[in-house]
Length: 206
Image (cartoon, rainbow, N blue to C red; front, side):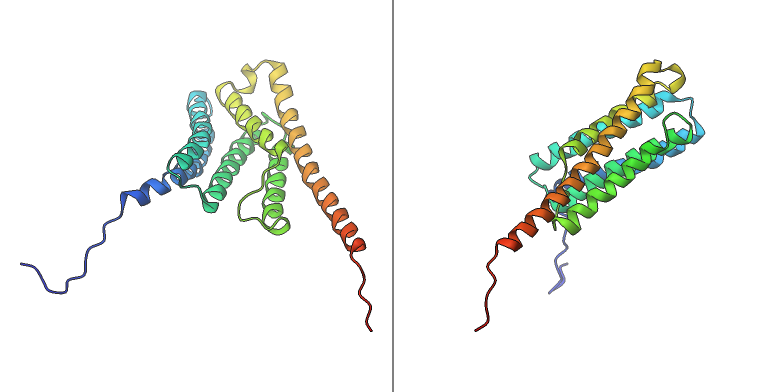
């Protein structure tokens, strides 16, 4: 028996779930960052587990963009989720490796400073609704995942000395260059604004 004036029952549209699928893939890296920390401190010898986590995170970083484009669900919020999930996982992994002495402590510190500059530059300086990447910062992000995967699958004691000694400084150089690249942009923008102010005619009061 039906009841008159009964409000309709709204069921979630499958399109809404598909629209958020890319964000869910990105957010999975936040969960995997916590899993990494637990595995690192409780089963450090299980390098295959850490390696699998690192590979899954790298794959999700590629997959979320593909899904967003395929579902036509790209958004400002999704871009921030993607970048934040990246930095949380990378910082968690590199901080653990620095704690274990596998890499120098300056590396996760540089990553944190670079991301802070990246976020502040996007929001406060360029007034952008989405993160504004730099060319060098993009490549540094790729090196981050390579470094984490290498360290996860082959702990430092089993790594070739050359790889273990070269990769962290190389990533550090990329991050320093990315920081300097943004600082140079600030300087050039300031000079351009000053030059423009000099070129504007001064109005005279009659």
